[in-house]
Length: 319
Ligand SMILES: Cc1cc2nc3c(=O)[nH]c(=O)nc-3n(C[C@H](O)[C@H](O)[C@H](O)COP(=O)(O)OP(=O)(O)OC[C@H]3O[C@@H](n4cnc5c(N)ncnc54)[C@H](O)[C@@H]3O)c2cc1C
Image (cartoon, rainbow, N blue to C red; front, top):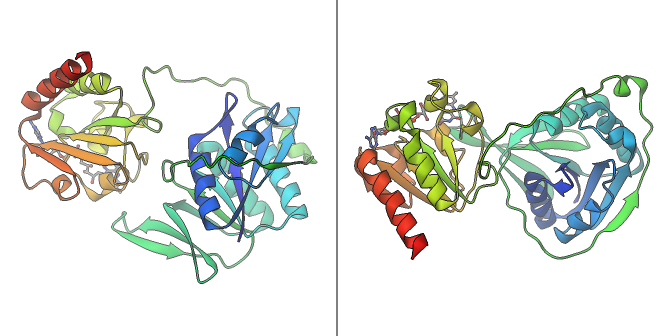
């Protein structure tokens, strides 16, 4: 099966979600990649290290800004010349725009919000949560090319050390595709790793009791070198910013360590963090659902446990 993985990049680096998806495609069949942008030729080598056999590159100043329509033109041009069984996108605002517009342009089927991909009896099958994330369903495609948008944080990149053949191509841009211009791109200032990239996440739930108590989890996260995340109940209450929400309607994360503090562990939260390496839960209710899937559970008051844990981590690090 021949896959094309759309690789997103930012500030000269390929994005982790794109590389994770590439690694998954490598495990399923012949994986090629496409990199679009301006001054991006050297990114092809990086994709080779993650197992891409061939990297299609359109290096064009008209692709400089992260706008969707010129990318749709470029992908359409590539797909007119080359046949792929599936075109895969790691979910982001840009990729979602590009995938949806490409599906409309090619009259192709797009399955979105996938949390896994498999090849079964020679057919590509997507896995996605349904019915409020209470069940997983298999989805397929009835036409080609099969387009798929994968949830952020689903696959870990695996470096395999290969090198890719680079295939340069050029696109013809439609006038309407160049009509939009980007006036400004602003980045939110934040300290420490983002929850998508962090190896350690300390996540807080309503059990924290109020926004003023976030210092407790921030201190623990700082001591562990991690990032702070939150449940929907917390962000809906305005205690912490929306970009930190983990779960069905938030982000999917897979850190090495996930410390859940005062979180009940609802299914909608679980789907966003269940692939974490080690899950530690601190909750005063021994019957909280989080204990059903935590690797390590501490039953007790977080206001007593978290400061002691932070102290202990700091002492161990200093030793
Ligand atoms: C369509 C839909 C989508 C949703 N999407 C998401 C999503 O993306 N992410 C998400 O998180 N939720 C989501 N939810 C909400 C989800 O169902 C839960 O309501 C939410 O996750 C609960 O958040 P919580 O664990 O912070 O709060 P609660 O369920 O209120 O749990 C608080 C926990 O803190 C414990 N606690 C209280 N005091 C202490 C203390 N002093 N010390 C220790 N423990 C204490 C309690 O025992 C309790 O278990 C969604 C719901 C729906 C219907």
